Length: 291
Image (cartoon, rainbow, N blue to C red; front, side, top):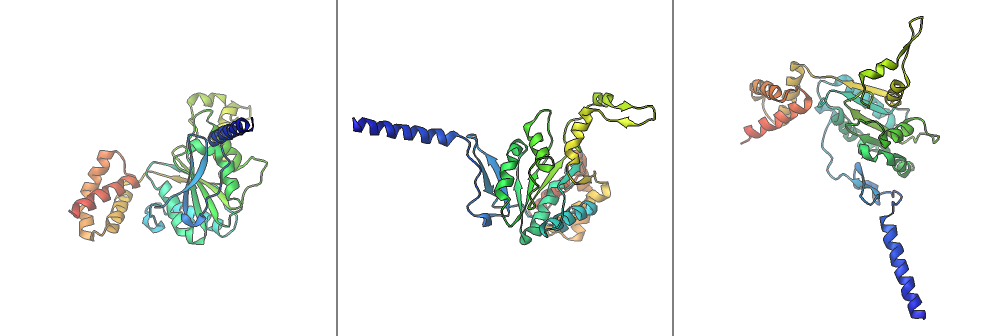
């Protein structure tokens, strides 16, 4: 009888272990925060979330980024205030694709990592776990940028409300060692439709009142304290970026000058004169010259 009872207990314990293994677990802190300066939040199919170290962070220096000096000054100043313990804002970087938004965030990470800056990349689909991430790092001495790249939402996505609450609106006080940096091609992060303008109302004295739909769409982006806009590059700006990247690959001034016509054709074929296209051309051209 006792033997049967013990086997029953053993089977029950095995069943409990299996159930616990598939239940969502609270997010735990990494065992070694010194393993990396950047971390990536990943949620497994089981529902378990974890912070994984990014072993090889793409090298990027602030000096490598050309033709965005105004944007660079704003982001670097805000980040410097943050790592020095002074007041700083959450940041929304918006504008044309390939103009250096995410590169600027990576460059700031490299610039200020020696002063204790760290970065946690979170996909849009995982933003519902933001409160857990913030809770894990809240007691750390480092400063953390929670970074979400190419951010935009469709109607009703759960991450929208979670981000909105973390930025400004939760009953919990803001955590002084965490800021949110996000990039987006949409200034208001949500799709906007012409029909929504019909909800505007006009008073007799000419005052305009936006409707509730418009107010809701603006409310998230307004919770970012600092907006930084990026614009398409002119031909001269594009060629200056090409020249900078070709020089960084070790090509001399004469070769850089000779590459200009090919750089323009490359941009024409791609339909864009962005910094990303300039970098891609420079890699292709430098690779061919090294053959």
